[in-house]
Length: 248
Image 1 (tube, rainbow, N blue to C red):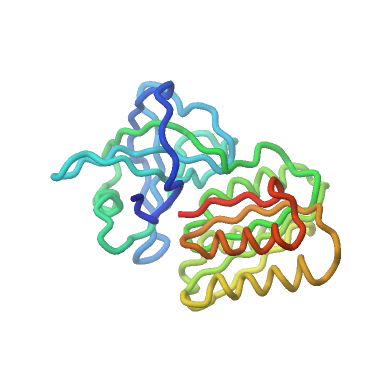
Image 2: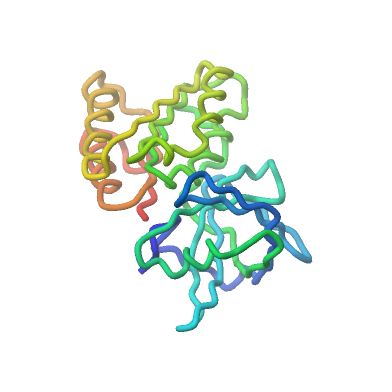
């Protein structure tokens, strides 16, 4: 079972993707238990990817090698080094190994992979909903959605159990000031009620308020609350293809 420190518990790496190696160029601690690494591919370049994709990192441990997926948190347009973001999880040996890495260290990976993606600016109002490090794949999606100055309304509903776990908050607030069509709503909610509270926000704003059912939703986070929110939206009249999600 995949540690929920980052992405894609059901993803598997297709054999056609070659193994690559990267060097850590920068380390940044968002807070005590959440970190980003910036990686530069050695002897090649990161294959082209869509916002929302992840890489699979090979993690050598005493009990045997493991492979763990981590979202690419930076935009494809930014090139390299590219960023992955992760947090400590209980008994997470893989993510503990990543926390031990330093600038100049190297690691092996394959990818990028993933179907939870946004390839182009959407043509319908789009709502991103993220929890904690679940914002990692959402962040480049939001930038891609806002690539054009004009367009449809874009929302980011972002929740965490503590204020320091609202990653990239300054960046999203700046985007909201610069792009009036981007609405950013951060929420600090206790972990035991986070997804139920998000469900009530979504129910009030995009189910009860009107009969419009042509919006797009992208949902990412840890636990069954992701599926409950997906099911609520689909039961409320949104098409299956309009509600995309990634459960960690």
